[in-house]
Image 1 (cartoon, rainbow, N blue to C red):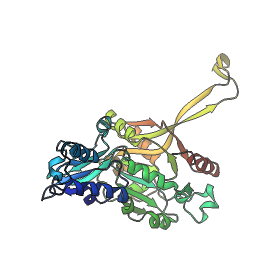
Image 2 (spheres, helix red, strand yellow):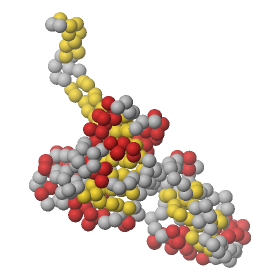
Image 3 (cartoon, rainbow, N blue to C red):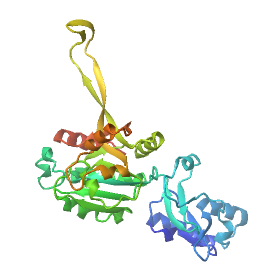
Image 4 (tube, helix red, strand yellow):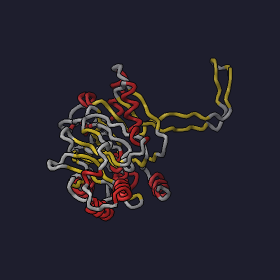
Length: 350
């Protein structure tokens, strides 16, 4: 929404403030109706909600009082700064709208805590260039990331979730029918973000396109496949990476193997123990990664290179690779069965 709709001059009356708050109902989807009172140079003096107006009317019964006189001068705000912004403390205080100000106390942006899960200092690349042959004939004329789940394409669920975690810069690597993806999302401005397309002349694997970006601005980069349907917690992944000092974290999903027979433990040919129909649980690669930007320098320029190649190189060189289990749902839409499952699952999401 336009920030100017949230600003009101200190000399406006509370009747005018009330009308402006009421107008927000029709022009925005903000979680809490709020205005920010400004002086002549547009710096913020305080905030006004409908509750502030009600209290003023109870005490003074005067609709002509000035906004600057009744505003909450002890309003909660953050200064704009690089790095991670922890929103949990504000949620505990039941803050719904967090204004972010510059050094001159002018409004830069707002964080709607009902819609924003986190503010992560990450740029992201979504890998969306694959052919999707296993989903043919569906993918004969539509790129796999653009197949519909409910009322929007698969890739849009991922982009909307990235936005919910405060990620504003997204690169999308494209090749097969990539024009459809570019036409649908454009430059990202309709979603309040910036999208840049990285065109692969040849298929570059699951990490090769990272080498084509001139410069990532964030210290860490999130990389993910476009055909995933998941509610992965990007904040938990990022915080675990920082806390452990790891070079890379990969989201993992549990893969269970049920053996339908007894499994022997042997010493040569002698059975020393056995387990009847055991189950084994493995942590498998879920196709979502956060890596230190410096690792991208290890990726050969414009060559086929998988992220697993980089993971193997990192481990062999003594780097620190960790995994972060996905607690929620995760579907890798690689086959008709997977796609059918995802289409049924999305019907039950709120």
